[in-house]
Image 1: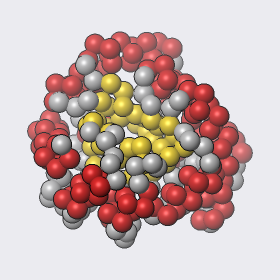
Image 2: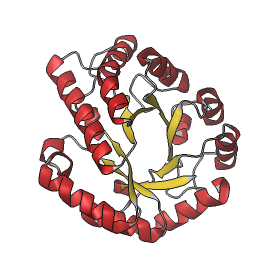
Image 3: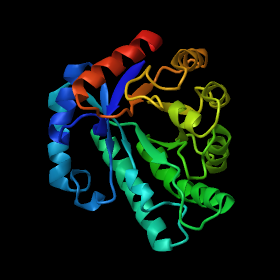
Image 4: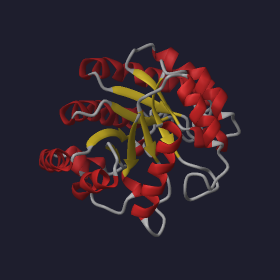
Length: 260
């Protein structure tokens, strides 16, 4: 098992983030690419060079990136210009991930205003199909996450989209905390998706700041993760709290105690 941490869990700029994560014991970092991505380090040659240097000097790797911009430019949109921007971000990020050694991109299955569930799901399938050849070329996975308000609020929804795309490089990013918050059984959903479809996992605990303080039955979730033979990244997506490093250490120890 490998352990990562989202950039939002630590109060550090990207150029310092990887070294801090390594010092705390994490294997990698997940970066969130926001709506201003064209002005970010992620999108400029100079920014990429500085990011590469920070990674190489840190001891931690770039585990994955999250296309957080999809909350404002969803592939489910009826606007072709919005969909084109979403596709540009995905394809550009696939190539940047390849160059920086990351193998996974988190794509939250976001909604679009006034677009019904079935229409949104079909548009997601079409847009991910359009990106899949670049994912296959770069050997970087597009990992689709179950999130609220979108058209993948359950494992069966995720499965329908992944199978609808039909690419070996379009898989699932499963979040058991989101599953619980959406009224589903995270254990059953992990077993349904299996290790052949889940390529990354988020760790949070709804109702609590630290893992173990909320409503998620982490012992049962850990048992399910072991049962399917999953051994990839588990990435913290927990509140920063007033003491980010202390929270990160606690949560990492919590996961290692249960998952090894």
